[in-house]
Length: 269
Image 1 (tube, rainbow, N blue to C red):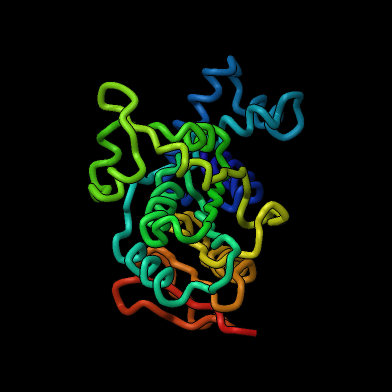
Image 2: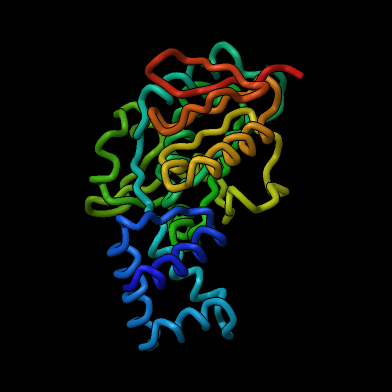
């Protein structure tokens, strides 16, 4: 793939999804495009580009390409430090009242993170309080997996035994499924975090965003963090991936949780 062709595709992906594909990932993009062209029977890259931007059925094929190019690296219980902070927040700082605690799993991929949050909340509240987790991702294919809530046993290897025993059930040889009472607390929505209007989201108490910001340019990272902060209620908690992004300053937010976790609390208005 020539540099000008790469730049054209990278710009299209950046404009539509916000995802940055640097030139050192040239082969990753070229391989993904070649796979989709073979699958659709299109031989000419220019014809494929025109189809994606102007042709009939472009939305369906664009979704398939995004599924292929969006890195969906995730696992259960990926960030023990952040989850420990979430437990402390539930115990000491979560707002009182009868309403359900609202939690966002931003860029949830195939759902392991969203279900981990639900399992931690179930344990923290012990059935004494309602909660709801919304998982968002740009990939329809990943969300289809998430909604099934069924995973091979190896994907649960890092999940603490107490959480697994309380909310995961065997469904066959070396396969497990999230218990129905947990799945009822979790919904999944397709969403581009940078551009989509969050009309489907309630005011949030917790935003959990792991391994997402690294795929965006710095300016877009700052914009995304500010968007996520805007969706938080006063007193709400935002947990990012450790070492992922540390802004110089974010008005209305202050750092919490110590050095081993990157998290912010939204100041009361």
